[in-house]
Length: 163
Image (cartoon, rainbow, N blue to C red; front, side, top):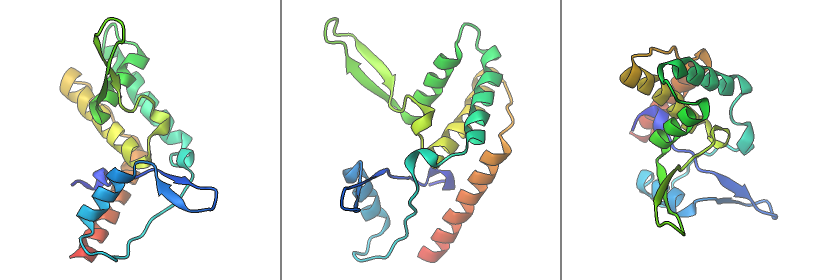
């Protein structure tokens, strides 16, 4: 697993102040797989869901999309964003109730709801897809590069601790 692939799990604060995983089965399976010993002490960070990324980081992704767009004749900015979001996070298949046609929708249709880790994956994939598909070399934003480096260092420290 690459350092930028460290998963983040959304949690919801209950009325009594306890926290619960939004997708509990997925989070519990990951934790059981990572921490084999029952009773292992682990660390968690808590912050408001929508305040995870800076406005500057969000603007950087928008600039990357806009910089790539001229190489995609006939595409709109919105279509390019949805295409990359689907590539990174997968698609949901929905059957149209009348026609029976199978429709594909990005599993994560908005960048605003992405965690920092997911957003780093998105930026990385924008850079890769633009170069691979259209020969467009985009420069990664400084803030993304710093966030990725910090995540890699944190993962390396955790790996050393676990060994």
